[in-house]
Figure 1 (spheres, rainbow, N blue to C red):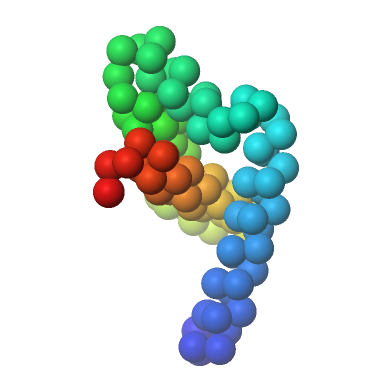
Figure 2: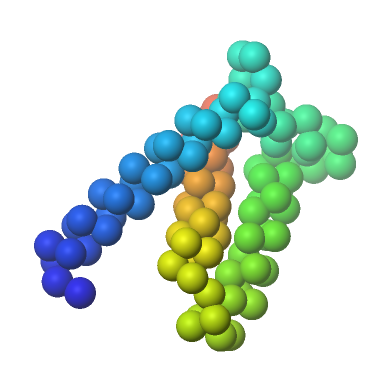
Length: 103
């Protein structure tokens, strides 16, 4: 892959994340706190919200690990969906770390 092709792919990836995270905000967040689900889940399990978020993300990590065993068995869309899920959880984790003032 050329550097130019990589840049094009990177921009497309960022745009997909932007679109999905904006859409999902309406479905998964509270009225005022975008990270509410992770805080609520963590409180219910008596774990930090960061650990709760990683638990949510692990489902996707496991799915990708299974897909990686036979990568050609999956469509481009299936790969993009799963890798996008992980990327979006990492963006949410960065936001949560900032929100909790961990940095």
